[in-house]
Length: 90
Image 1 (tube, rainbow, N blue to C red):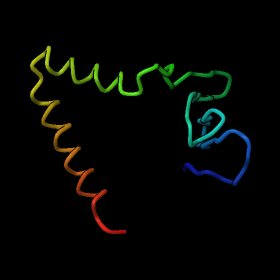
Image 2 (image 1 turned 135 degrees about the vertical axis):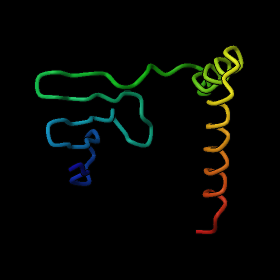
Image 3 (image 1 turned 180 degrees about the vertical axis):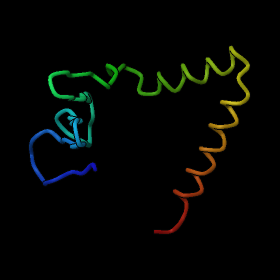
Image 4 (image 1 turned 60 degrees about the vertical axis):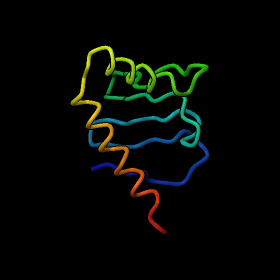
């Protein structure tokens, strides 16, 4: 059971049965995501970098360095699916 319960100008929150995910100041420009589980708070997001493609470049580099064809094929498949879906007329 998860849902966004209201339109608000406050931080966005997603409520679960025992947990709440709080999404920074704006869901449109996410800088921080925290998971609240009773008395425990876990930071789920990573700090932003100057290069918005840094994490993708690191993943690509790891695939090349480790000769990881399985992950490369998986990402290629997902890319093709996403491209196919995004090119469908609305």
